[in-house]
Structures are given as structure tokens and as C-alpha cells.
Image (cartoon, rainbow, N blue to C red; front, side):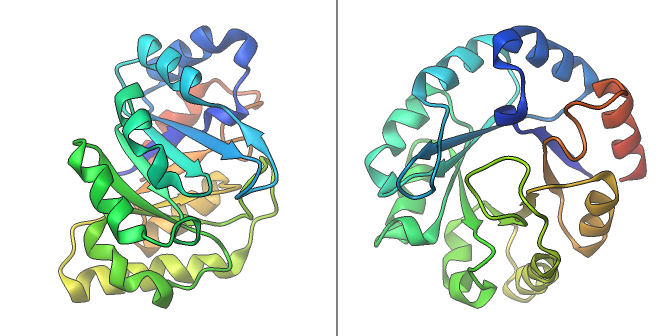
Length: 218
């Protein structure tokens, strides 16, 4: 199965209600929300009020990507705002295992986000505390980043570790994902994909046409 979740950082926020409704009707599986503090990454994006507003617009799961320094300080607030999945970066906290455990105490799925510069070997010991791992194929912080081909190897490596360790975690990918890249990464073992301008937004086809085709190919 292929889990497709649009990155709402790429959406038209002047018309977000209509965009969310159209995406829901197209068959997306959830919505991806990037939270940036201008410290962990050099940009600001979205916030608590945006999550609360989205929770009123959709019943689909919200996966929240925290690009924040010391995210453990804010887990309770994001969980209460309506997060269904929370991703954190291992570099963002000295207590990443405790943070992953904390996420789960709220009944929220815990996720590890891996920067391009982070190797799989650096996070293997954390995998048993995560429900998902998300491989970043671009440098995080801005939409429209350059796709880094070498990151594809991480998906294959994670698939191998998942099998060897007997883990149930899901492998997701985020960053400049065209339809062709989604298909290739799915073959490597990824099951979830964050879609932005490379595959979904700003295209001549409708969301329904794109999502239907991608799921049929998956």
C-alpha cells in the first residue's frame, strides 16, 4: 500500500479550506504540516493555530514535522492541538529517546526525521522507539529544494534494518518527490510519501487525477 500525504506548506493558504476539501476528495491519506522555528532551520513555517484550524477542516490524520530546537518542550501542546503523528529530528534534542517515548504517551505515533547529512547508522538504536522514520531527500527548511539522489540508499538500508530487527515501523520519504521518484522509492521499501510541488501542487492535472494514478501504480 502507498500512503500519500500532501505538504500543506506548499498549499494556497488564502484558500486552505477549499484546498483541503479537494485534496480529501482526491483520496489522500493524511496531511503533512511543517513547523519551523527559524533556529533549527533557517525559516519559519506554520504553527499551533494552523494545526487547530486544520483539525476543524478534516478528519484525516495530521502528521506534524517539528523542525524545532528542543521539541520535547512542545510535544504536549502539539498532541493536544490534534497531531496524529509527530516527527522529531535526532539532532534537535539531547534526549531524543525520551522525546519519542513522550510522544507515544499521548497516543500519538512517534517519528524520526533524518536529514540528508544524518546516516542510518546514527539512528539505528532509536528505531525501536519510533513508529515511523522519514527520510529527507532535500535539505529541510524550504520548499522546492534540490533532490539529493544519495539519500535513496537510506531507504534501502532502513528496509534491511527493519527486517533484521523485526520492527514494524513505516518508512516515509519527504522532499522533491516526483511520481517517478515515488515509484522507485516504493520499490526500495518506502510506504509513505510527502507530496509537494514536484508531484502535486501547481500542476495542470487535478489532484484526483494525480493521486488516483499514483495509487494505481503503487
